[in-house]
Length: 598
Image 1 (cartoon, rainbow, N blue to C red):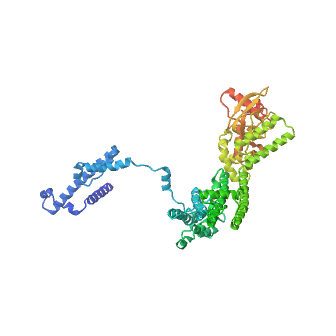
Image 2: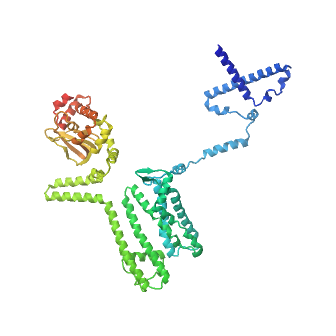
Image 3: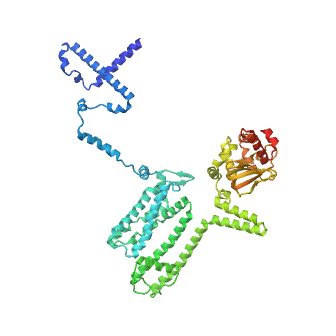
């Protein structure tokens, strides 16, 4: 009872405090109105009357709030209508037309809202990283592309603007705008991107901003980048706008070579880019020679001799045509007349022979690297055909061998997948094997429930072999030393008196030969033939490799032996007998023994 009494007293105190906080000032309580004229004259009775009146108003306010809360729970859609208003008189006033128009305008704007494209939203949400991996970051490769564009602008157009009269007072501002835009790209590369590149120190990747900045400033590339921005353009005020003063911009050549390396690393057919790049080297040599030829012609006077450019037609195309005939030594050029022309022509011939031979050698290396796999395939096939011809192998066997080479190369792009991965570390080979073959092996019911790491180890030991239509995967009487997993295609289990009766057709994901591989039943000789039905690509697992793996996984070994003794069968007795017969033929277990073990 005391607790209830104290709790009621606390509630009364809270209500009194709430009532006091609900009114903004003490003067409002004592403010005069019509009711005060009828109140008692004494101060005590007057104060109690005021308190009782205010408490009744407070109770009334609580009831109204309770009713509004109930309405919100019953009808949540009308909850916005219960928001407090500034003045009751304003609610009663009808809305004016101007006010309705103002309220409708934001709604119309929302209805006409246009969502930006996805790439714009991704660009707005992109945050510049504090460190950049130069080998895997595609944004950095894209930035190197813009730096390479700026460098190529200077490399190609500085000599052309110096030699040819393409830079005139009417378009000088456009040339300067493009020049300073390239300079801005250079500055951003030095100030923003290069100091954020990660590097390896003592085997650890460094992410610290200060260390990355210091590492960049210690490199030779930083010195070259700074020299490339030497402001020789200040001499414009004395010599005029001479494009040769921008020659230091060519020293940022290391960004060009880095872009080549990064782009080749992400391209699937990098040899195409190598051919384009080698061709551009030759075109640039011709470009420089054309610029020099026009400069010499302008120095001696256009059309002054038969050898120089006569000033007719497009000057750049005519001079470029002369450079092509000179460097490639086609012939049919006019004879030089002055000593200066003779010396220039001799230098052209020597440089042309030297540069053209280098370009041909590079092109040969690029094409040879691109077709090295196909060259190896042709060499293997030619040697095999030569070997079969020397031993007079029958033609039908030779044709099947040629068909195997052609199909294997067209389906896989290589003859042996293991040779491609032999140089990789063991962990990387496992990662590749899991990505390529795990989906197929994990669906095999025989390995379900086995240790996951055991399956990973088994993937590294699988060999992929292609069988032609009609090829025997295993023959009757052979000793079973392998287990087969069908990767693609179909195989047929044949037997019977004529050896052509098809017992069952196994498709992709099926396994056969596992019982003899696990030494179940004491025998491991095949009593039936398995023939490829069409082109079939099989995974082969040797018994020696499997035993080496199962030594480390005894629980998985017990599970596999149990599944080999009691394979899963349909409920029908007809199919039970059929499967028992097939298993007996495959692994060399007599049908009676297989039935008894079931």
